[in-house]
Length: 492
Image 1 (cartoon, rainbow, N blue to C red):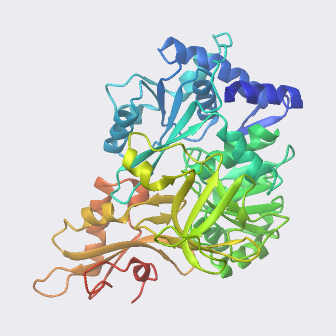
Image 2 (cartoon, rainbow, N blue to C red):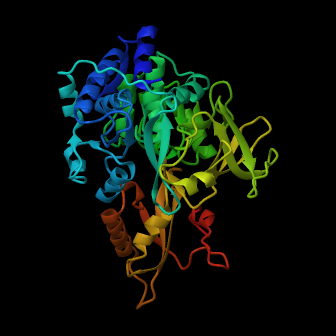
Image 3 (cartoon, helix red, strand yellow):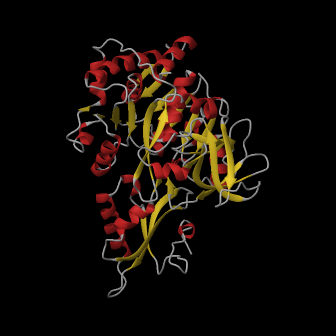
């Protein structure tokens, strides 16, 4: 199956071609228009040498152009490499080199990061597509590589996670249709972006597979902008991370969200207190969910038929879950251990990392590196990461990479970084610093300002700590290992 062709045929057979598919600013495009544009844009990419087996780096903001670029790449049997346009030049260069991309779809600022790679902007792609005839879809198998998404490892080295043409419909079938009941009358708004697994499922797979629609916002929307978009487009399903929901509670009015029939939370720990407050504020349920880049989208989720607060719900249809100990033995219900899952959309592997594949993918099972326990009714309680990663704002990142940068400052003797809940219940990245020995205690405000400035010059925006605290010591074991679970509490 060629995903782009299958989605176009599904829209025609379902009678969706005249229905809205995507809303961006003041523009709304129908399902029929999106698929026609994608077929024409495929010709534009083909003229630039893109074909089966090619890789195209898409570093555009969320937009109709992003969707068209993705579907056009799929139509050619090429692989879309999904990238955050706000990454540093060094990270963009790594993604381009590691993936072997032959074309960059991005705006000029990102093009400056990769001067040797041919580039085409999103607006220009749509303009050129107007002068093309629809390009035929390449015949590819279900397991043909569709896209690569990069996720950080414990060392901070990004890992390319491969997914196939058959996977996107599975995201919708499992979580979207069978659990959440997302349908042709629904309007989705995902605060998480299309280049993340959470956003790709919510804002691309769900509308294109159902005949519904999605709101696309190029920038990073604050609470006021989220409220405005929800009210304007009568959003029925809101997808966000706990931090975003906490900020909505503090800075917006509930009247803007009256169209929301349900909301979904993922990407961070959702506290029971925040979940209850958000549900009361929205006047609709807030369903907690767990997903991963390696699984493609949701692993488990709550929904209308089964909603158990304090859990991330049951495995979505098509997924199995086991809780195992460190030796790989399956544990009984109620015992905490590592979460292993098996499902059709689990990645076939990381790009060029056979040793990592051998550790993470065993006999069809994926080690999520999450700690969890299973309740007797099959619900999963998420207990945090089993490795040294942090999940903040829906992004999994390696704090060790941030700590290495901050440790170079002369005022720092020791440093730890973790996601810590603030007074709103929103998780924020914070750095805890033991000052270097010297004459007197340094000024906390000066240290914070200088460390944040240092982080901004060398790290991605989402890796910059939101605050810095000076402490007497860090919680370490007798052998010197950092007890990050204590750092996450913000006190020890």
